[in-house]
Length: 275
Ligand SMILES: O=C(O)c1cc(=O)[nH]c(=O)n1[C@@H]1O[C@H](COP(=O)(O)O)[C@@H](O)[C@H]1O
Image 1: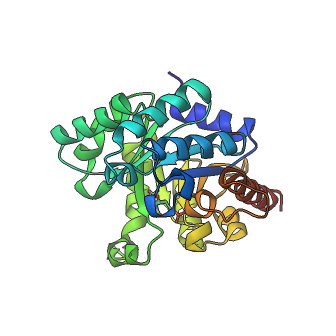
Image 2 (image 1 turned 120 degrees about the vertical axis):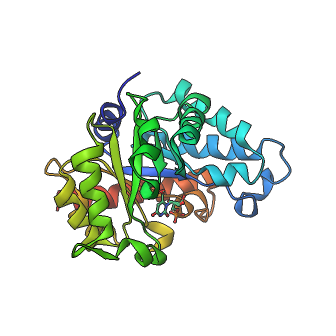
Image 3 (image 1 turned 180 degrees about the vertical axis):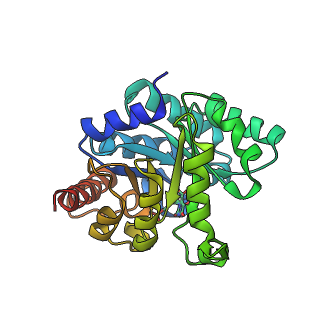
C-alpha cells in the first residue's frame, strides 16, 4: 500500500487539485428520485464520486451520516468502489475518534481494515497513547483536530497554556513529538485563516485538512494564502454540502450540479494558488 502522504501528493498533482469532496449523505437532502431506493446512500455517493473524481485530491466520508442511517455496509461498499475505480485518490474517514489505547486499536481496525481508509480524523484530547494505535498502521495517517472550524472550538482551543493558545500546543506536539514517521496531519478550519497561518508556520509541510469553505462560509483566497506550503499545496480543502446538494440549473441533474460546483471550487482554489 502506498503511504498516505505519497498518495495524496500524487492526487494533488494528477488532478491539479487541493479540493477534498466531503461525503455527508443526509436523507432529507437527497434527490427525490432516490428517497425510496434501498441503497440510496450508496447510489448517491457513487454518482457524486463519478462526477467529481477528476477534480478531487481526496474523498472524506463522515461516518455519522452513514451510521445514523444504519448504512455502514453502504459506506463499506463505497470505500470498495473507490479502491477499485479510483485507487489513486485517498479516502479520509472522518470519525474524530478518541479513546484509551485498547479501544483505539479497535477504532483503528474499523477505519483501516473494515473501511480501508487511507486516513482517519482523530481527537487529541486523550493524549498520545490514544493516538498511537492509529500510527501502528505505517502506511496510513491520523489527522488530528487542532483548530476546528466551528465557533465553539474557541471554548477550549483558544485557552492560554504557558502564554500560548492550546491549538498551537497541539500543532507543536504533533509536529515535534507525535509525527515521528511522517504519518500525521492536522485539521484546521478555513473559517480561521489567521490561525491557519500560525499552524502552517509551526508544522512546516505537514498536510492539513481544511474544512469550512462552502456551507460554512470560509474565504477561499484567504484560506489558500494562509495554509499553502512553499510548493503551493499541503492542504485538503474540504467542501461537503455546497457540492453534494448544489441546486441543479435548468437541464442539469444533481450529479452534474455537484460537478459544476466542485469545478468552480477547485478552480477558485487554483486561482488563489497562482496569485
Ligand atoms: O474533521 C472534519 O472534517 C471537520 C472538522 C472541523 O473542524 N469542521 C468540520 O466541518 N469538519 C467536517 O467537515 C465537513 C464540513 O461540511 P460542510 O460544512 O457541509 O462543507 C463535515 O463533515 C464536518 O463534520
